Image (cartoon, rainbow, N blue to C red):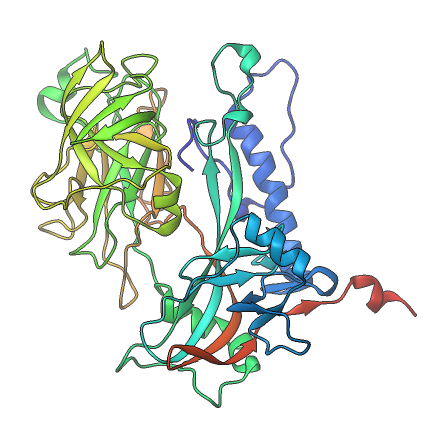
Length: 472
């Protein structure tokens, strides 16, 4: 979550049950956020224990997918029997008519890995299964938690305060996706003999087909200063490793995913929270709503920035990186230049755009990011002020870095160091990404024949109310 936080202190392995505020003490965002995280961890673990990895209430089971609507009395399972009133209502709201390749998703609730997914009404999912060939497709839910600020939802800001924002929000995002085996691909496949139980009872094996089995890891440390840096009293304490003048929460995020030699990353000393609303974009020039409340959270020449909006993030579109070439503070206009290998960027129409500042020194010959791989495996990559990171070799074959995976590194002036797990010898321990955590659930097996749905098997799990099991 790219919020303006001090740090994230929740650790499920500490098994804390609650946060207790004490009188006369300083209050921190991390304490309040940890309390919410503790409660959510408890509730979601309880949901998994009672429901299983996925399932929905029999009385309000949602997320059945349909490929069309009909008024037939006994329609096939892939078609929704709909009344004239509902058809008219959904047509007026833009859900109907469906285009070729669209899904219609039923309303209701479904739990995936303890996360509650809700669909308030029938909704359409454009190009959900994106048919490339005839064959069998596995439709599934991809669920994760998404961070929202007042820039995306203006109503969360109290206007009586005269402008400042306060707390942000998190929401559950669900998407319906499909998978089909590629020619020559090994592993379990779907065919005419595949049954619902084959999918539901062996779901983890299927997830490995479309989800990386092992994401890359990262180490972080603050190096011991040497030479002129160690003897310069103007920097900070002589024995400090972290040389910054302020407390920071560094965010290291994978930009372009892939194997280690292909992947790139970007980083921010503000957890990626420095964002500017874009009023107009054109010709690599943006007009912003403001240039930041101060120089620390503003823009300057040669900064690397990305342009994005929610639609791009939810589709998994890689936000393009640009370098600031000049700034007109009077007109609030920022001129950008794109990396040499980056294709022209055309923003989605009729959707709010935002510009996010990163603090790395990008490589214009690549994509504006930084290479994950180094010349030597043992090399550390310096960020700034003594903060270093390393992407060590993984222990699992097929190690993959996923776009959007991130790590958070708190740096503190009081200790002159970064907060990172260490072994008994004081060496940094490699950590898996702190996020984003995706959870999955099967929905249906669909057979496509001559670009038509030939068969459909519902893979959802219905959960009966607990009271039915307790009633004598």
